[in-house]
Each structure stands twice: as C-alpha cells, then as structure tokens.
Length: 462
Image 1 (cartoon, rainbow, N blue to C red):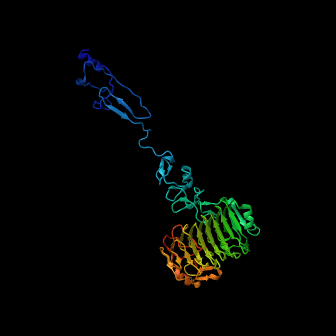
Image 2 (tube, rainbow, N blue to C red):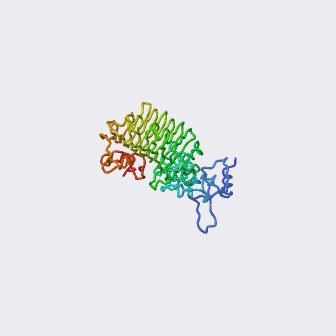
Image 3 (cartoon, helix red, strand yellow):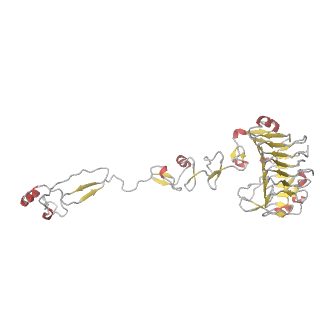
C-alpha cells in the first residue's frame, strides 16, 4: 500500500478524466486545475479514465470514474416520437382506411379501396371503404348482384327491372346470364313459344317477346333444368303481347316437375278451348308473375297443385271461369302462394270465385282486391291483410264491401280493372306499402315507396 503522500502526488501528476463543472475557468486562461476530493480517496482506490465513441444509431453515455455522473447525448438523426403507418394494412379505423403520407386517412378513390380490400372496393363520400355505392357496384355479383346504396351492401335481385340486361331469378336473387337471352316474334330468334320450347325447353332461358299477332299455342315446361323468364320485349310501348290457346283441351302454359317460370308484361288470355284447363297450370313447380294479365280463360286463371308455389304481384287475374266448378281466379291445393298488389276481380266459378285453397296450403294475401262475380268469393284459410274483400274476413286493415260494383273499374267486361274515381273513393287508401313491395304498378306508375304509406289496393293506379 502506497503512503498517502505518494498517492496524492500520483493523482496530481495524471491528466484529468474530465473537467469538473465547478472548475475555475476563464476565457484566455491557459490552465485549469482539478482537485481530488481527499475524503473519497482510499489507500486501494484505482484511478481510470473511460473513453467512448458515439453510436450513430442511438444515445451514447460517457461516465466519469471521478464523479460517478452519466452524461447522455442523442443522435439528432434518430426518431423522437412514434412512427406513422407504413401501409394500408395498419389502418383499421372505418373512417380512415388508407395510409397516406404515413397517416391513416379517409379514402379518396375507389382504386384505393379496391387495392386494400377487394371485398370493399368502393369509396364512399365520407371516406369509408364499403361493399358498393350508387356509382360503383363492382363488388356485387352472383347471388347478390344488386347494390342497396342506402346501406352500401350487395343484395339479391327481387324484380326484373334490377337486371335490365337479362331478368331476375327471384328464387335465388341472381340475374340470368346475358347469354341466355333470346327474342321471340316475327323475324326474331324464335318465331313463337313452340319453337323456343323445342330448342330451349330444358335450359335456362330469357325470352323477350314482341307484341303483334296473338301467340295461339300451348307449351309444357317440365323438369328442374327448365328455368324460363318470359318478358315483354317493349314494356314502354303499352302493347301487351297476347298469348292464348283458342282450341284444344290443354292449358296455355303448363309448368310441372320442379320447373321454374317467370312472367312479366304478358297477357295469358282467352283460353276458350275447354273449361277443364286453366290458363296456367302449376304442378309441383314454381310460377312468378309480375305486371301480367291472366284473364278471360274459361277453365279458370291459375291452378296450383302438389307442392306448387306462386308469387303473384301487380297482376290482373280476372274474368276467368264460365260458372263451372273450379273455374275460379286462383285455386290452390296442397301448395303455397303469396299474392301482393293484385286484382282478382270478376272471376266466375260455381262457388269461391276469387280464391280457394285447401287445408294443406299456405297462402298470404296483401294489398289485393278479392271481388268475385258473386259475393263471398273466398274459400281459403289464408292470411289476408290491407285488402278489399267481398265477405267478412278477419285481418289487419281489410275493407269489406257487399259485392263487386262494376262501376269501380274501367270496363270489367273487357278485363280492364283500372279503378275509376268511384273505385278510388271505395278503396284508394286501403293498401299499405311496405319495404320490399313493388315500386311501380302494372303500368309502371309509381307507388309511394315509403314504408307504412297508404296506397291503392290492387294492381293498377289510375
């Protein structure tokens, strides 16, 4: 162990590790003095100086063994706060889905949304990426081809107008393929229904039918592969294509064995060949009728049998039957039907002129006219609401009348069931429009389109 005097001499002889903040310095003074603290020195202490180099990637420390102080410096090139987003996948907020200049921001274009998430490829006005908008339905297709712009969600179609290039397969919500569209009429793809059925009977098909001479023929569509849509080719010209069967013991259209048929804007009428067969016979198959006319058929309008299904909307089913048994407007046996905004008027059977169904059927009627040639024209355990009935029938919003008044309509003898002013005074506000109901009537006139609004019962608004 060195004598205390020797240790002091060595300490004075060594260069200082650092200059004490309390050292006496002055500008221009060529020397400075560091004085060791005797009280902290011991006989076996070791004096050292530590040098460090600066790490450019982060803060550095310099430690003085004489004072025990640590001095930290920071590289000015390093980050001083949290980093921003580096890509869209780091932006999860619905209102800020896109990374722009390292900031999660509202979207500015459809392309940004499509690049981030193909399932939500549309940029809404408020900057959110959504499934679709009124101007961009690229994200819609398959069973959900239509954009509900009110909620920016793709949905299935429910009306043919939603698939302007083909037709709506209402049962599935899909639009028919445009390749399945064919024309019927003089000089068209097919001259008539018989020619079309011979070529396309067991296929998916959309037939756009031209008006002109009456199509006096009958066809049968059978089997699950027979999925047809039969539409008026020119709905704006007010000329309804006429399809009839004026001779022979058969229905104008027979649908059976799981076939599926959609009809819009066609008049299936004047089947006067037999009182045994209705205009349209559906047996274990499906019929979807929109803005159509099933009128003046001696054997009745529509029969549904053996698990059949029918949707009848915005349609006239009137003037059918000839007083014989079963020649009513709609007859339903062990089958289901939904009848909306339709006019079942002046059908003629021996009983139950408008609607008859057995206990094995499930029938719902709403916003409809049920007015037979004779009073009490309903014999069906149906659910009937907001409709005009010619007998006492329990149901929300129904309006009962004593019997049909021919003056309520334009010309019932010519199957014109457009309400007159007298008719509107009787039932002009009986119906109640609900979300999902047709937006137009049989002629294309606008319905209210507001949930809960009063409306004209039946298929036609004058």
